[in-house]
Image 1: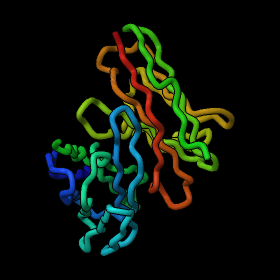
Image 2: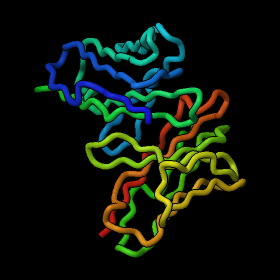
Image 3: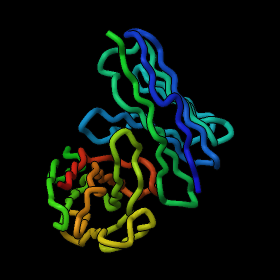
Image 4: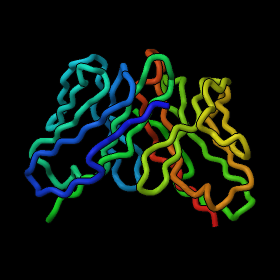
Length: 111
Length: 115
């Protein structure tokens, strides 16, 4: 079945640093989604990507839909304490109604 | 502008009891999805429903688990005769269903603890 590999699994950074995480798939997706989950809460949609090569920003967040349709990355610039949480990538293939989720990247900011 | 609502937020059950988890989708959304999340894990798809129809239940265990989304009222995920391994966070998401399954919006989750 389809699998998403999300990396890194966790990150420890200093406040103000830029962050980059990515997802790769074993098959083609038509939609890539990036979510953030805070402790005790549900995932919140950050960015949705619908077209290969698409580069979309949401404030300090930028995400791209890879040209091969098998990968996506999320960048966070100038990290702040409230960026701490778990970031999930998710992909959707048109032949299947299910969204497949990566296992998440846990972002920690060092004091 | 209410989002996806789930209740209860926390549910404690003893082994063998029944758990009923409720989800009210966003206004105007007719598609509901249920996911399960274990600690330190990602989200695992369980079931996809439209009003009065189960579209895909391939991620839901065949025994003890059932889901419905009636014409009126919230979607219900029902777990009968709960066991300790059912302890997890259960999330509901909804989408408008205009373009497939993309752009799902999640509720805050129900955290089930089985004693």
